[in-house]
Image (cartoon, rainbow, N blue to C red):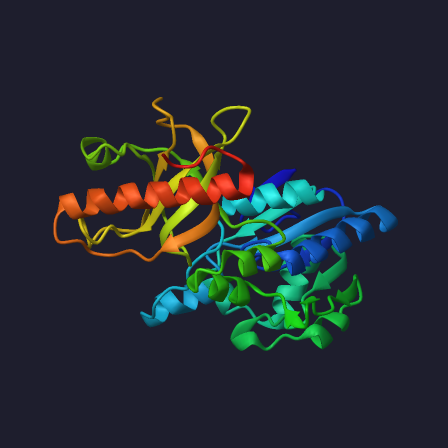
Length: 316
């Protein structure tokens, strides 16, 4: 898959595109349906299956400009690109959403971005897609173009519920990992590179693998997890996702994983942590002794959950 960052005055690609546009946060089941349809149309029409996405998203841009709280992110850019690749997308264009782009009129976006730069011949958008300055562009604006045809994606429902990034965030905020998995089409996971931490866990008897986060995740708390990217087989453990209120309440969110029966260094390794079960919320303890005792109970609970679902040995 060819990845292009930004737009220029020239065409981004040599071949005309079957294009879909969106933020694709989480690449949930509705997004997956859009990617599948785009790849299918590209094959039928001999076009390049292409995605146009934004970083930051328009919602993030306007929230930052207004000084408002940022929405939690479901996925990183790298996560999105991996999902695009797996879906068969051949070209991904990542555009910084900034003030200049926010001021671009709907007609100028069609003429400059879609027609000239992306050479769009077929376009798929979501059922609630709006674009251009003050969200003035609609699907009717797109259908007025003469150089490409437009499809509007139907709403994807699961058991009568609309699949959306908002719905996934709500499920994760409530600790409902099963509901999040139903909407995502897979278990919720975070991928990142292992970094050095404060090594406090090691002194407490629970050495952890640390993944600093550049974004605020929608999930927090203590969870049973599976970790991939270390060996050919997965490893399991218990993870703390949040701000560590007992030791550093002002820190940015961090993901710390205690791997069962594991003692190797992983610094710099890119791993994926999949969340299997939320055990409890974060809690501030009076002292490190109380924290350590709770960490042991959490590890035992995670082992027992994993044993009952995956057949691994239970806690002693």
